[in-house]
Image (cartoon, rainbow, N blue to C red; front, side, top):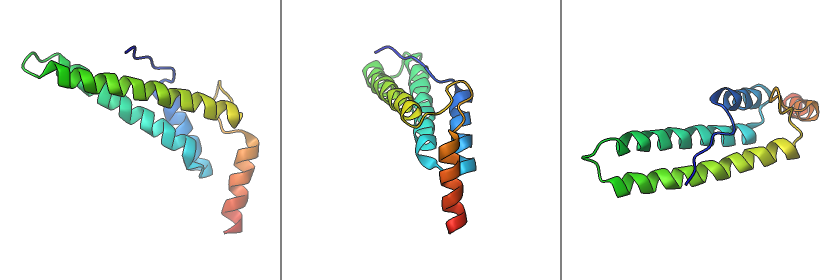
Length: 107
């Protein structure tokens, strides 16, 4: 399984930040899930360096993490396209900001 990071950690942090500011948690949850799966994958890569560990176990976990990571990145790509996020700045589109602000003020 090939492991590829299409979103940098900084970019994921930006999506999470936008979600926190505008109280739109769904894209932020996907970004956080990507970060957690990366953490799992990196941990397994470290485990694979230790010859005393059962290689097949850690390789299985790493392969599954890599596949999950790819699916979550596909999901993030789709979210950004569907919601029309600015791909360069990763800022939430104005129409979603207004929508979230309206929901906040109506409470």
